[in-house]
Image (cartoon, rainbow, N blue to C red):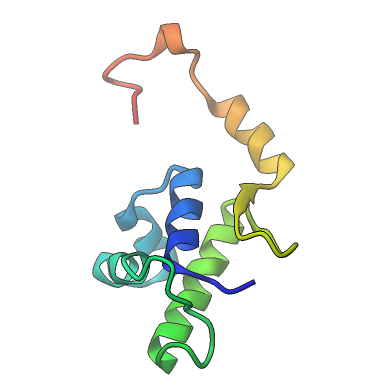
Length: 105
């Protein structure tokens, strides 16, 4: 399945990471992450983009996978959290009636 900017953005949002957080995790600038995401449905795979972008996509994908993201490879473009990552997120969640300005991140 081709990697696209839309898939990268969906995966980042799913993890709850900001553009800056993801950039820090993969050693890229927030501008680079934003530029890749802004490509939308455009393919970002080897041969479709520059060598520099190919390396950036590899680093972003690796960082997202370390956060528990799975890129679906069954022919349907999409992303999901690994079940273990969902369980961890639920353990760290705050019940809605306990959300305050201090813990709403």
